[in-house]
Image (cartoon, rainbow, N blue to C red):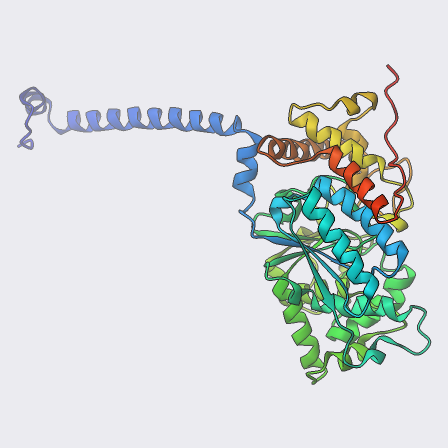
Length: 454
């Protein structure tokens, strides 16, 4: 007997036609539901495809914790003060978001000049850039200052002191991430979340292609191996800022102390300094490769054959194809000014103009220059010190299309940030030029792109 139902019409229908009818009705309802579901899914997919770049970025990058932009210098040297104002400071106010976190500047404790410099700079920033937070710290000399002096060293004690300081960046901030920046580096393009993170992992860039150069080959490789007992994975001095978790510095220093069976880092430092040189960046990041690899997103440029290069790395720590495939995933945002074979200063204005164009806010000063995404193909070089004039890594139809897409996404994000209140103002760049004059520093005029022919 058919089951009892409340609707008499359905009941009479089932009584006459039985369970085949019930099966047909159930199947029809199922088909109708699937059609409606597919239609709704298609609509959702269409809406997803039409999402704004802002939604894309918010879903693909994490809500970042505060990041410390870290700089170590000695203000007693005029060249360093000039580099700080003219290269770092005036490009940071353009392209480093104040919302990401504070800037920490570490100077020499015993230097009167450093204290005067700090007071002047702090006053200038409070007056002209109240939205930016600067913290100045003063580092004392090691208990045994002779630890900074090496027999036959080609570098002076001040240089060695900065190398020494590089192992202690973690003690000057409580932020979980440090953006390590040299005073002779300049920002070229807006720093965004996507240039720092791939998903939830910090992006690391390194190059094997410069490993045969003098310093990486002779000194950095051997000093890294002395420090860790493990090989230097790649040259990590090829890009800035270098983003590293604060506790990675702590862990690396603790590892080195344990390796040399000492609680005195002065003793360890004397032992790892080799051939008058050392690359703390390469030591710390090589440590991260061997012991904290999953915390970082690795983007390594290889010029050697992968299998051959991997022969120098221990089992379980080999470089995989995945570690080398995304090197064109983001443009570079800064470069080492003194070492670049080709001047990149015109790209500062190019990036400024492209950012405001993406924001729907074209700047009058940009109308006098020819600016396009292709002008910034140079930012895809993995090592901006080794640019081949007239060439870019974006050669070839598919690669060119990929680079254009990445740059378009990058500047669209900068444009969205501007719409949401991010300041990318040329007057800030000019303000720092004026502040430099107050500190008796004359910054060179910025080289600009070629003017439009029209």
